Structure formats: structure tokens, C-alpha cells
Amino acid sequence: MDRIITLTTDFGLTDEYVGVMKGVILSRRPSARIVDLTHNIGRHDILQAAYVIYSSYRYFPESTIHIVVVDPGVGSDRRIVLVSAKNHLFLVPDNGLLSLFLINKYVDAAYEVNCDHLFLKPLSNTFHGRDIFAPVAAQLAGDFPPEQVGNGIDPDKLVILSMPEVRIDPAKGRITGTVLRTDSFGNLMTNIHRDDVSQLFPNDLEHSVSIRINERTIKGIRTSYAASSTGSLLALFGSRDFMEISVNRGNAAEALKAMPDNKIVVISEGKA
Image (tube, rainbow, N blue to C red; front, side, top):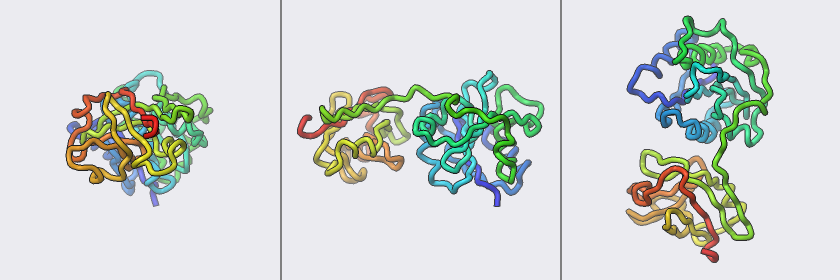
């Protein structure tokens, strides 16, 4: 059976770009199984895409091929790479999209994609999703060996983004992180992972910690949106296991006048 192919882009669905990529895949591999992960990554937002693919790949079967096309450098000398990590394949521009895999040392092998004979011709300088990513993924969905897409490259030479740092200070009983983005519900998505918090605060998160953001203090970390009254600010770990700041049936970004790069602090309730 063919490998599954997932698609993650910043193309949106207004134009024909996503459909055309699928058309190329199906023309080359009619039996292909294609899953749209999302096409609503913020325009050119490599960091957002990096978190989305890192949080999502694990819910697919091993050997799935993940195409991620958030590619502001299309047409430049940036590389297209195929990366093997955690028994999945990732077909991406080498622009930092796999930073979290690289930081966590999950990458097993990497190849520069230069198998020109598989590309769609003539090759566009502005739509490599159609002309390179789609036909190469279609070939990989069958029995085409990953190492035949091009020369092997040292994973340590792949681009890593300058990621917002999470600082854990046991002496002060605090964790400092950053707001990354706002989702479509107005929830603030942060870079503080559940594991970061459990290192410092292993028990009773509902009563042992406070969260500070934009001169507001939120008491405790809840287990669900409904655990707070309607209109109340709350903190919880979302489905990606990263901390979110939300308003039950409301919009946290508006309530806090929050933006990406705003600081967020988790602190021991006894030191708040």
C-alpha cells in the first residue's frame, strides 16, 4: 500500500495551488493517499509551520511523507531536502521548518533533492510545490528509495531557526516563555511545553502556580476550557501539549491585547 502524503502550506484555499499539487501527485500516482494537514499557516510563517508539523506528525502511521511548503525563498539558492526522522519522511525547503526535530536530535538522515528527472517541466521559479515537491512525493509514495532523491547531507548542516527560548529557573521557581501566535479562536499559543512545567512543578498545577502575562495574573493551570466560568481567563495545555492562554467562550488575544513575542511567566504560587 502507498505511503500516506500529508500537505501543510501557507497557500490558503482561495486559489488553485493546493488542488494543482494534488493533481500532480495523482497524475503520477493515482493510488496516492493525500491528507490536508492545514493550508492556513500564516503567510511565510516558518516558525508556526515548524510547531505545527512537530506537533502533528506523530498522529500518522510510520513512513508517512510530510510535505511542508512554507517557502519565502522559493526560486533562490535555498535547498529542498528530504529528511528521515522518527520513522517519517519530511519533504521541505531547508529554511528551518524542521528546527524542533533538529534541536531534539531526531533526524536520522537527510538528502538534498536534486533528482531533476522527476521534476515537472518546465520548472517554475515560483511554484516548486507543484513542480518539485508534488512529483517527488508521488514517487516516494511507492517503492522509490529515499536515498535516490539526491546526495546525502549532514543533518547538522540543515538550517535551524532562532527559536524563542524557554528559561527554567529552579532557584526562583519560575519558567519564562513567549507567545508565539494567536489561533483562530483568539487563544494565545506559547512555547512552554507540558514537560517544561512538570520539571519544576510536578504536582497540583491548578493550585501551585500562577501565570503572568501583560500585567495580568492567572491562577493555576486548568484541564479544560470549561473548567473556568464563561468569560474568564485561563491557562491550560492544548492538544499539542504546549501552554495556551484562553478565555472561556471568548478571545484571549483581545482581552489581553497580546501579540507574538509577549513574555509569559509561570511562577510558584508561593512566590507570586
